[in-house]
Length: 167
View 1: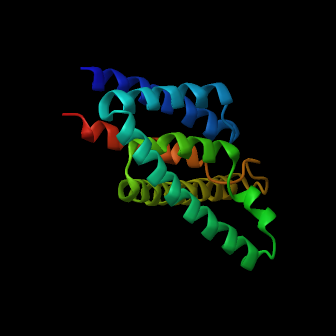
View 2: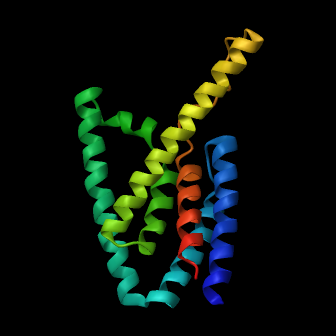
């Protein structure tokens, strides 16, 4: 029963995070803090402190390797590591850091891949809709929002994982 309550609470927090990310491409720090407290409490109650810390360390190690790859890509592609700021936001990094205790290294890698695929699908649908709206209205102006709402895409994947894990 406790798992269901935490799943509902974390899912509700994820829904608000996703809404903020979609709407403004930013998320409030207080909401990320609430999410992190809920996730850490859930993990410690379900797995214990040792496994929570072990999962977090393994998953953060995966993130560090991927960030290193992203920095290498930026240095080769754009001749500057500073371009990474346009690809990721601080909210994305904080969100992923506090999602890390939910998964081991393998599962976290699969979660990241799934989230990236969801984000790319999101961007494709958004581009199709914006292109269709431009053709219908003969309008050349976009929405002004750039980038993929990664927290929203990750939230959708995470809620699906959490719902399917309930028994």
